[in-house]
Structure formats: C-alpha cells, structure tokens
Length: 69
Image (cartoon, rainbow, N blue to C red; front, side):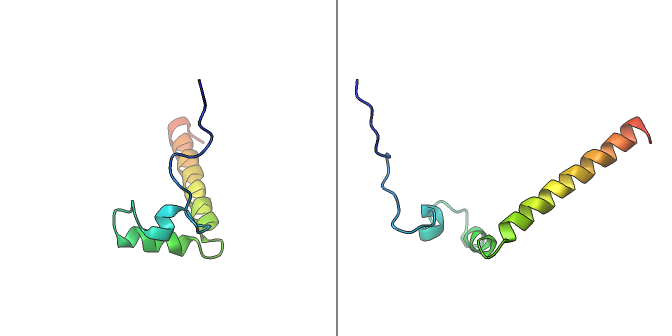
C-alpha cells in the first residue's frame, strides 16, 4: 500500500487561496468583493470580534431572562 503525499489539486501560484485569486466557487461577484474587502487591514478580525461579542450578549441576555437577576 502506498500513500500519496502530494495534494490532489495543484496549488495556486499566488499566496491567496484559489477562490480569491480566480473568483471560482463564489456564489456571485458580491461575495468575492466582500472577501477581498475583509482582507484589507484587520477587518476580518474586527468582524469576528463583533460576531463573538454579539454572541456573548445574546447568551447573557438569555441567561438573565431565563434565570432572573
């Protein structure tokens, strides 16, 4: 039995993932533009931080409503 160590698909030449470099596998051009927008600066970290903060707020509010203050 031999194991194949090379990836099944060739790696893109760019440093970005293939879907960003070529635009394939996106549902539309808006998704590609949004992905490229998130890559500028620390916008992706800010988005994830905001989503996590919203999750924490929802959990705290639901705990207060369910169990009381």
